[in-house]
Image 1 (cartoon, one colour):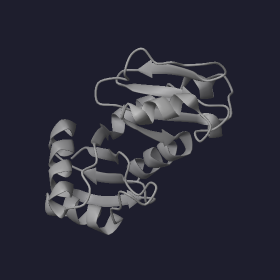
Image 2 (cartoon, helix red, strand yellow; image 1 turned 30 degrees about the vertical axis):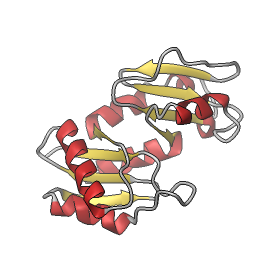
Image 3 (cartoon, helix red, strand yellow; image 1 turned 90 degrees about the vertical axis):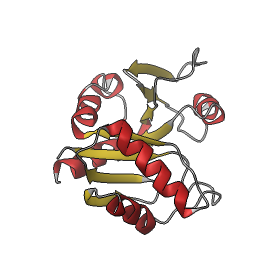
Image 4 (spheres, one colour; image 1 turned 180 degrees about the vertical axis):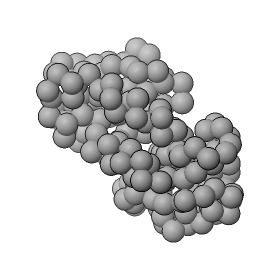
Length: 170
């Protein structure tokens, strides 16, 4: 069965959308997924599933909603998709500080047009977007725009690469 990573948008951020990772693991296990684990408290789930990623996303979203309290967007990438994303980061390739690099995961691409102001940069890769935010996420006008637009979910480069390492271990 393929390894997949599910990314939940907006859980455990700011104390308004709390979801215990034990509950998330239980939902995934109850859905029949195997080798279920989470990484940090921000809604990163690893699992094995025979279903297609879109089906896994829908089933997880419904299972989480059934818990009550939160209804986060759920985006799912296969281990293969995640690996391709990691090997193709143009900002890391040109030598930028990985701590300033992020990925916006979206369902069908970012809202257009993106208002990217230098020194920030964004580059699409399929439905996902590499972000270079030299002043950090907290001070980023682009990150604020993406949050308002509910464009997807952002993960730091460190989290993205750690998720790939964990997926490789399944």
